[in-house]
Length: 232
Image (cartoon, rainbow, N blue to C red; front, side, top):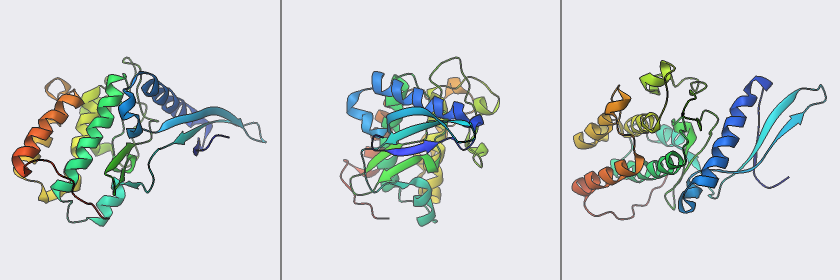
């Protein structure tokens, strides 16, 4: 079997989630900008596994190009009093790159929560994982809410409405706000709040444009961008 991390559905009823992930990662690999593909996992293989009892479960073999990855869930646990906004800045920027890559390929991630955003602290790498909740068809709905994260979702998901790029942007902004906590300056909090408006039509829906706006704000707050070492 090719090298990678094996994901196997715990129950056949979850086979559709693994199928969604395979579809999303194939579509991003085929239609996404090759320069940014390291921001998402690669699909090494996808197949069905039949157990001795005859139960059929879908499996995906997932590979990532970075090492020493840590989830933002771990980062939050190690920074209970809030993450320095200057550290959150590079994480946010790279998360928007991952979303911009996916959205241009026609894929909505649908589950931008702390456990699904992995960082490589030394080189400031970010990988957005777990595409099981994704939507690669504009007429589909997000299939499920990540357990324990219902408050993190925008209204259109909870109402079983149609998701879009603004859905991911809403969740990403909320995640970054949670990470920074009270340490976020007012201007950055206002920026995040603008990404979390209830109406999808009033919310930003272009991750690349939003990245440019975030860069302008960070320049005003902290001056020219420079590498800032991050140690967990």
